[in-house]
Length: 181
Image (cartoon, rainbow, N blue to C red; front, side, top):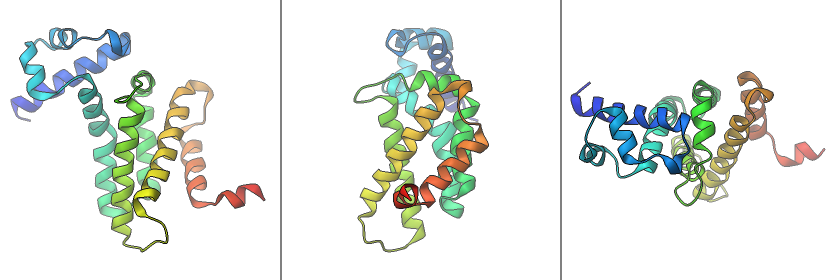
């Protein structure tokens, strides 16, 4: 890994560690750079702001691995499992991340990334649909983002990884009409 990428990773890990112990609003760029052992301009060489770091970590840990799976095989049960596994691996961090709210909040970042990946999956499938694919991508992305948010927030009293994967796969493969029967 080249030095620039190592520095970017160092900054991301510094932010990740800080978020585990402080509220997002109380973390400054100085805190991040001091912990990483770099100067402030180095941060701005790699990131625009704290929200950018948050999105970088999400993409690195969740979106990129899942996107690669979707490119190869479409959105399948292995990709769904990877999504939930990635969040489970760093549950404490993502619990704190979901507390970052507002226009650039974590849920919004997650939703937009899921929407992009759902759109790619629909395009890969190549099927024509009676509904607008962008609207369908929004629908499934917001549903998945909410399922992840509530599952992560539940802590130990929530479904296991196997249970949430089975639940979500059942949810997206059955219509609301089947639930009402």
